[in-house]
Image (cartoon, rainbow over all chains, first blue to last red; front, side, top):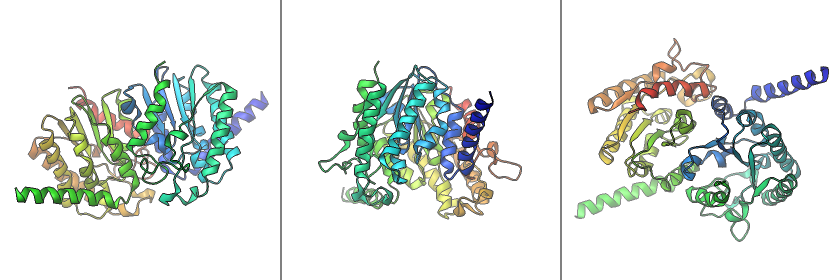
Length: 218
Length: 218
């Protein structure tokens, strides 16, 4: 009893701290919107950072039940802080893509992959009915010179993807390897699919759609 | 013939220039997505800047045909540059909210209102069937101290709203006065609805929804 009380107090304190800092107002603008709209058992949730935020999933996929739960700049920790408002609804599916902002904060591949897989484990624990799809990180292209914090991180991304593929397999979670679909021959994000080396133009989302189609029907 | 050729060339050159500059990659990321998804005659389009971008309209309103055409940071000029991909679809309705980013660029009220009303006129010309709803600017709250370019612009926003109301009336376009719903007694954006003085928290979008309900049914 005492132990569970202490645990609850620690969780609440951690939660309060993460919001009290509030370095990026956008995170809480989106998070507070999501608090007012809990998914239901028919929802298909797209969960992630700016790559997920940038798309209009219900429109692209022609699925009224597709919900965007992307927030620009979100790390795995930011996503963890707002995950409860998603799993509470026991959605039909979650497509998760997270980790690239952790890479920009100089975290090593093992740490980023472990944090993404901790999200996976929390989703499986909090909403066992949900079909969960773990998506790989996309390649980046530093020739655009827009994100200095991503310089030299190409190999880190590849390592994370290997760890995520293994972690998904171990857990019986479907892994969607987006990475090769977006790569040029040098292992960079195709320059015709981006204008900053990190985010996607419209034709990039059309490729993403193709990768998702096998998982949308059932 | 010669004159129309020159006009067409000038229009193309202006368009190319506006994209060639591309100061904010996000604008073209969103614009290029929208180029791949043209609305149809059943669409209800929410057109604007970050305030529009930040919401999940189809989900908030329970309308599968609601389309988000908001882009963070867009000025009226930015919206004009991508308007053709919206009017081409002859959508059922457009809810327009634009101008606050022009204010942050120090443009006077008369210029901003004229540019917003030019968008109105273009929409009416390019898609006469579309029911157009012009929304007022929202109040701001500079006590948050996040946007120095908005300091002292409270009165400019009120002047723009008066000009938009008059311009809408003159054109027979429905004007939705959002402003008073979001104001505190001092004429500032209610501090419980924002965390930066410009953008909305979730409960702000619930108020916006109430303001829209009378116009969604028909």
